[in-house]
Image (cartoon, rainbow, N blue to C red; front, side, top):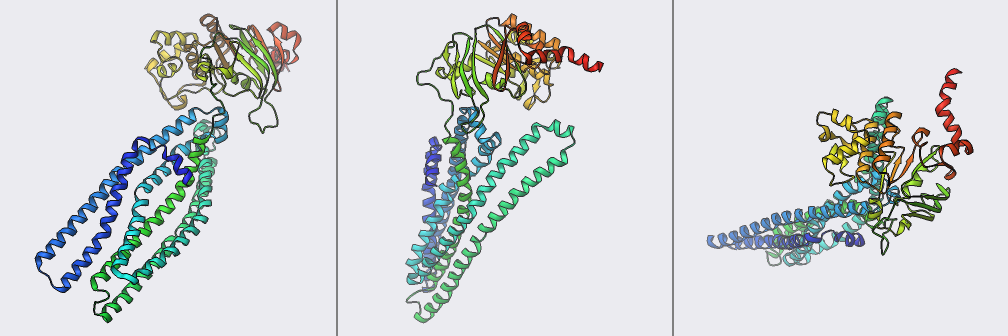
Length: 585
């Protein structure tokens, strides 16, 4: 817990001042709260002895001033603690989000996107509540407990020894609760990740869910995940709920003891050992001790929950990005030449099978290279090594004659544009999405890129044209429109290497041909890698690679492969003649 607090305390930063001021106000509030019963007891005893009204008014005025000071300290502590806690949350979210941005795909695969969302939201909220309690209630309650016990000793002498007896009993009770409640809370957080993953999956695949009429199934799946969380929380809260009866039994039992024994002492000693005012103060301090212990119990529960949340957040902060910047990075990519030197790759060190094996390849700058092959043969994996989305497990990948590991990641990725299989658009206008490729692009450049990507026509058909708003995930445009927008976005980058990963699969063959023609004319010096299922999309490429089982099994031009590669020839025949033959049968 101490290590977690040290790590997270770095996120307080500019909010240290309000946090420290909060502690000062809390100390003042606790001290005043402990003094008030002492002065009240003195007032009761003086009234019993018979004093003038003037002295009663003076003591009463002192009590009112102290009460107002206590109230002011509490209110100001609430204000400063809220500012410190919300500032801490802002900094913590900032640090976690920036750390996630430095992650490679391998790091993200380790946590899963749903788990990262949970850690950025629910877990940080729990850490914020824990931080607020630490600087406010977790300081006030122990101080009130200590001050009340000290003042009780001063007022009641040996009679206050009973307060010392109940504290270890309660401490043992809290320890037992913590030991049994923490595993339940840990289980809950893991189930939160699974539930958020289910929600994310359901929302993203809503069209599929509705297309197959699986709404009821999804409801049942979500209900089961929600019930699991409820059951774990119920189990944990049942354990935590034992705090209250144990605490009340000890404290109220102690108050009964004080009343019985104290009253007897008042009567038998005629007020010489202890007086009515002291008994009154003892009862007040007893209630303060009760309230302090109740607050400590609540803090304990919250900190138990926050400790697990803090551990999960710190896992993200402590995670080291798998991709590291070189000590002396190369900041400029000279050209778009690509070389794979005996490259092998697997997605994790523990994986038994390599996704790529012994790939050796040379591509000159400006070439158009087609990559074909069946599903799962490593086509996407191959191109993801070029901008260092992953690092090769063995061998070396060079771009512009330089090992990609020696480039600044920013410089390398600025020189490479990718249109992936899963095209992503972001909430905002079409123009804003396009300017991801070039933030400084003019309206004319946007239109030019969209014309080349065959997107200008359908954009202008929208009532708002380039100011048309794209919904989250691009759900208000078709798959083909989304692909063409993503190609236009990549063209605006004017990269040295352009990678199209099956990015024209949702457009017709005529549009596909027009896009390829636009690429040749607009960026002739750019190296173009086109992954495609349709042979027609790559048959005019300078070089075509045929992949199977994570290896390049054949390479050459369209004509050369028709003569030398069985895989390529069979695929071509199925796509060009197979349909007619099957129809005839």
